[in-house]
Length: 386
Image 1: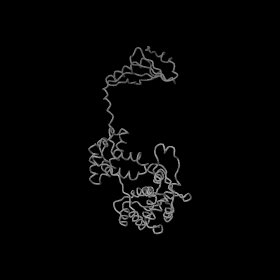
Image 2: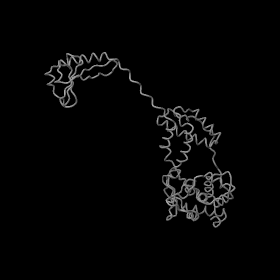
Image 3: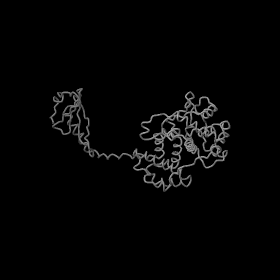
Image 4: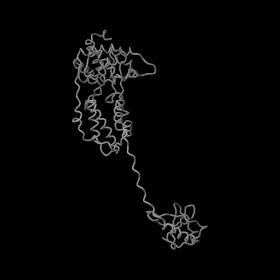
């Protein structure tokens, strides 16, 4: 609705309870009077400038200093000037975000996905090698051909096993990026690993009695933290990291057991390992370091392993073969599979896992005592082994 404004009408318009009221003048197109809840009155000239989608509101004055006649003249002048204004250039399109570099995505991947894993340190080391190759490249520019080339190079330089680890790491990292819409598709998609680096070779090595004897005595001659670690691996069948990263706070002398927390276990489930007399003797012979909860302090696994091989004369084996050897020895000693598997922290599956909640601590201790007895006979007796 438009109203022919007069000074009297302008002065008599009631203030709105909320918001602003607008009254349009019937005699001057584009002249409007706005009144606020506080009673303030203002004249505006309203029109669209050339090229604008929305009208411009140009404040031209307020009563009583400006009457209606003056407001109409000012509105006409403002509207003429607005009509003559040069068209505004269209707004520039928003700038494209800078490309996300591979190094930045890899850092985010490590922080979100890798940091909490049991194998975080080794995983971060592998990712760092990939960053050294592609770190300064935008992740969107890394192609399937780039991935294949890197895998082929890894096969040539370090072999199929290393290439398989690399393939798995790349698939996880690019999958992480695709899930966050940083790339459209993972460049690892559709790459058939078996044609590039072959299938993983299943290790079947079990140490013979002669080899067990040689490794035990070589570990004893090696001495120190590493020698004790190898002997504990032989007595327990644990994984390398489960013993190598052992903490004194995990050794419960009162209950005669080692309690490895879930965070350090492959299946993220805490593992209780009963202590046999030989295990206790080995641990109690180790020095305690002030303000250091670590049982062992060494880092160069490969260097120490090479020296151990020189001392023992046993070649072509890895520390994980001890785990397989212990499991085989438990079976040979007559230990039931259900117990032997729990000694190695292999839990049951399916309905047995759901309903059988027995902790098997007594059975595991009995099994480890049987294995200790057999191992001591193999290595030449308890006294000589100690």
